[in-house]
Image 1 (cartoon, rainbow, N blue to C red):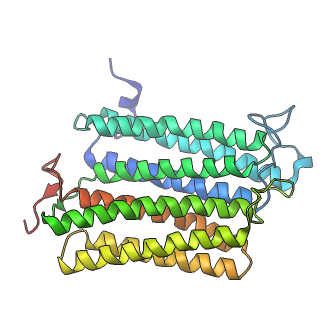
Image 2 (image 1 turned 135 degrees about the vertical axis):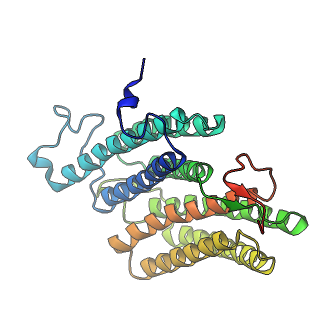
Image 3 (image 1 turned 180 degrees about the vertical axis):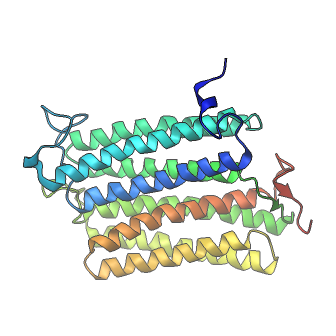
Length: 315
């Protein structure tokens, strides 16, 4: 008997491009919820709904006395359901396409399961009165979903790619791409530590982590400077060898420079809300760039899993 998804256009026999479009939508939604979550914190609305899973002890929705803070926090909670719908649709598209690999199906399943898990962590942040370490964990787990969603977009792409050269120097490039990826994670985590010591707690009564903002900021900046050095090395290597990864390397470097500029400006202008929000968006985009870079370099070291989407350099 035909399943329910058979009645929905596109899901009966999903094409490669149909699946790919849904994986892109899934990635965009995961980045979007990071930005809206940041807006909750930056507007001081983290405890706009003082409990979880209900908004108040007596209601699932905010009442007038909670003001706009309650509306903002409740709105962000509702967006989680949009994210869940997109994840389910992406899961269905990937699983119903017969050409999907086991790895693709496992990955989208983990991402889909990770979203409600993130909702629970978000609830714990409220129940702990926005403990900065729990808030940090909430953000880092969101970034894990963003990176996983990026892998899925890359793997389901129906467009041809060049494999690139092999040898010692390309292997060096691959190692550097992994170093850049790990340093990106270090920078992102240290950024959450800086946030935990700064003024944007999510609520005026929320606790801070007790660390000195100037020292945590310097540590965060040091990690970024090392990352910039690695990114430059990757960029030079890919340009000199004329590798197909050069565009990914340039994109990552550009995102890194832009993110660094936003970070410096926000620091010297006392952390205006709009710039902090852009910096959070930049974190998501930078992680996408770092993940994409690792995936591109991986093409030089493995046999193509789909002859229709990979081609030797110069083909």
